Amino acid sequence: MTIHAEHPFLDPEPDPVRRLRGRLGGAVTLWTTGDGTDRAGLTVSSIMLANGDPARVLALVDPDSDLADLLPRTGVAVVQLLAWADRDLAEGFAGTAPAPGGRFRQAEFDQTPWGPHLSSAGTWVGVRLESSTDVGWSSLVTCVIEDITIGPDDTPLVHRRGRYQPPA
Image (cartoon, rainbow, N blue to C red; front, side, top):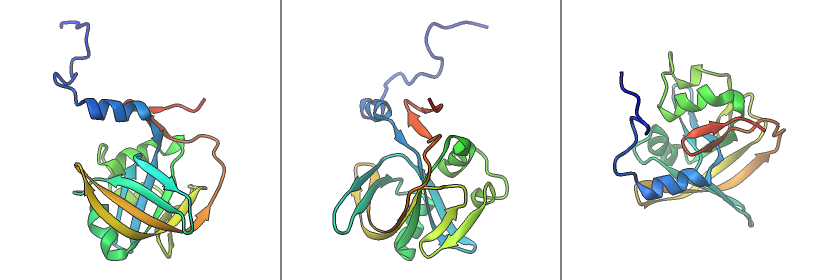
């Protein structure tokens, strides 16, 4: 076995934009839509809020994701903030970890008018899709906030530089 001074899987030509985005960090959200067996969800950390009347939430979503496919058909979604305890769930919905039985079987969800709500998520919003535009390699999704619930924020799930940051 050889011991290297550098990371053995380091990208030889790193994408500087991806590296910059990783340094910005952010709260990890779970976007969900649909009901019954026709549901989709995606872990999203590229998100922004725009206050106004009405207020909006904007996110960069993978255009090849199930969420990007189903959201225009349902027109609504639940955006919930994840907690430190939701790390494995976040990985499952990101498609980076196995989800035996399906992603929605990894936790308990309640059905709302906007889609599935993670029962343990105290802070969440119900949104209605306003527009979706291709931006770079992502879809910029703009949604109008129709309902908002603010819960405790004791142990938020934060992603920075490719890792989840433990609560302080």
